[in-house]
Structure formats: C-alpha cells, structure tokens
Amino acid sequence: MSPRQSRLLTWLSAALVGIVCVLVFTEPPAPPPADGAPVYDRVFPDVDAAAVQTLRVDTAAGVVQASRKDGSWVLDAPVSGPADAARLDAMADSVVRLEGGRALEGDVAGYGLSPGRLIEAVLADGRTLRVRIGEDSPVSASTYFQDEAGVTRASRLRLSDTFTLLPDDLRSRAVVDLDAGAVSRVEVAGAARVLVLDKDARGGWWVEESAAPGVDAPVPPGRHRADADRVRALLAAVEGLRIEAFPSGPAAMPGGGVQITLHGAGSPAVVQLAQRDDGASMVLGPLLSAPAPAVTSAVDEVLAAPGTAWRSNLLLPIRPLTLDAVQANFGGRTVDAARTVDGWGAAQALVDALADARVDRSVPAPAVAGDPWGTVTLKAPDAAETLHIHQEAEGGRVAVDASGGAPFLVPTSVIVALEASIAAAPTP
Image (cartoon, rainbow, N blue to C red):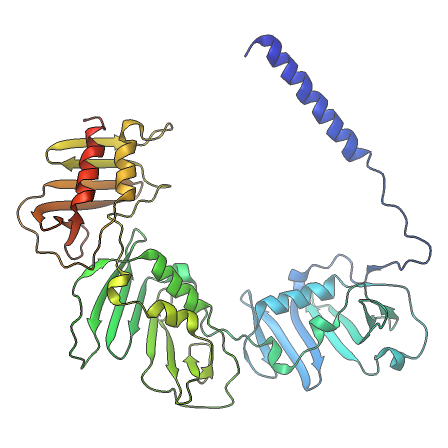
C-alpha cells in the first residue's frame, strides 16, 4: 500500500470515529411520556437478584420457601430437597426488578389484596423485601400489588404467571445432579449385558461389553475406542431426565430394568430405569426418595444400540485445536511434521487423510503378528496417541492402539489413502 493510500485510510478512520462520537454523545434524551400514559418506577432500586438469599411465597396450600445454599437453590418448605433453580432465579429477578405505577385509590379488597399473596425476599445484608400480590388488571398486562409502604399500585408486567404457585411447583424434577464433564466412568448394567465406558487421561472414551452375570450369551469381546458423541448423548439424556410426578411415599422399584452408575467427583451416582406392569416408565436416582414416573425415551433410544455400535469408527481421534505434530512411518517412508502459524504445509494431505480415515471396530480382527508395518503418532502439548499397523489380513491390515484396546482392521482403502498422503509429505 502506498503512503498516500495509508494517509487516506487514516483520515477516513478518524472521520468515522468523530461521527460515531457525535452520534453517541449528542443523542437526544428519550421523549417524555404522552399525556395520560402510565409512568413506572423501580420499587426496589439498586437491588440485584444475586443478593436474594431466601424467597417465601404464599400459596393456596401454604408457604413455599427456598434458600440459596452453596450456590444452589434448595427447598426449605413445605418439603426439603432440590429446587427448580431456573424458576427461582426468575422469581428473584422479578421481585428486585418490579416496577409500579401511580398510587391507586379504593378498597384493597377490590384489587384482590385482601389477603392476596405475600412475597418476601431476604437479602444477603439481612433486609427483607415485601410485596403483596393481588389480581391481574382486566384492561392491561399488569397485576395489582401493594408495596412495603402499603400503597396499592399496578405493575408494568403481569406477576401472576410468575407467582401463582402450588407447593410442588418449585421442586426440582431432576433425577440426578450431574456434571457431565467430571464423569470418568459409566457402567450400564441391563438384564443381558453390561457396558463399561472409561475416559482416559487425554479425554478419550473406551468401551467394553460383557454378558450380565449368570447370562450365557455371545458378546463381542475386547476393549475399543468408544464413540465419544454417543457417550455424550447418553450423559446428556441422563442429565435431562425429569420426573412427571413426585412419589407419594416409599415404593419398590420394578425389576428387569437398567442401572446406570456414573463415576466422577464424589460418590458414584446410580440411576435406575424400569417399566411397571402397566407399561409406565419409572426412574430412581440420587435426588429422589422413591421411584417416580418419568419420560425415559431419550435414554432408551441411546441404550437401544448394540454394544458394537458404541465403538468409534475413527482411526485415531483428531483434535484440531490441540494437535501440534504428526509422526508417521508407512512401509519405510517417514514423515515428522509440526504445525506452524501457516498450518501443516506439505503434511496437510497426511493430516486430512488421518482425519478422514474410518474403520469398523465391530469386525473381528486376528491377533497382531510381527513388527509394525507402519506407525502413526499424534502429539498434543500434554499427550500423544500412537497407532501401530501390522500384518496384512483379509480386507486390510491389523492395527492396535499403543495405549491399549483390542486389535482391529484398517481397510485397504484407508491404507492406500495414507500411503498416497505420505508420499506428498516431506521426509525428515
């Protein structure tokens, strides 16, 4: 770019900045409300929803109270237990952001405020905010309320949708409190088979299937790399389980179901799924005191796949954001490439071929024999993945992960693609 063009761009940039500043700092104030239009103001100015530590709400069946403990909402009354955090956050926000109009005249009973529903929010500094909710306005999307001074006003937004509650409405319907990222092992035990999913130090998943105790059934042997997407789908489905109704008392869990044990930080979490004789799906988990009906279709769909479907079809897990170097040796030709700021250079074809390589780990493979014909190592800042490719077999070559797992077959088409890609890469 010439000096003249550079100066021109500098002048244009400065002019643009000046125009923006003029627009920002000379923006006219908002016009005053039209004559007769309602004017609203904050009832509790300068209060943030995060300061609310306890909420008490009058309901038709009594008082519901929830408090923050260790950063989470829990119910204190009418029962103790996990609370619906999203709904309580919304309620706390509605209280502190409440806006009211002018004072209204007349008997409070005419506004549904005798007695109405009392809302109390206790703040971290010990103050208590109080609002009494009445009926909805028949002519606008607002609700009559009484502020702490006893003044009757109309809210800017309708409050009845937020604060009309039954005692069970704020109870959490979750089955398990799950941090999917912290899960390191999953055991799925059914009537006929057991799936064990393990996460290694590099974040990759491995799967092994076996017959359930006492079951004489053929099960494809071996420990294999697992389909990480399928594992994530299972964890998401378990985390998303919600009960349809709360158990009324102690009850036995129906037999013949599936037990999912999740290991990670803290004690293992056990979730059980089964069907009653009438076909209703039942679930029992750490957050429930007894089995409860639930929609389990998302979990059922994931678990319906056979054990071999949990095996990864990737030759090696390619992690583009952390992959720093690739070493490969196929039939005596060697490549040792590191990623630079400009990419992989002539080794890009090899990286692409590895990313595109697909295998079928459900096909039985013979045992490894002899020295490796080829080796691939993927390096990240804190870990490495190595694959050894051995003798020819029907349909391809036998391969095995250096980090463990059963042998599997690399198709001939993949071998051909890898050889072609390494031929284009520079040798060390």
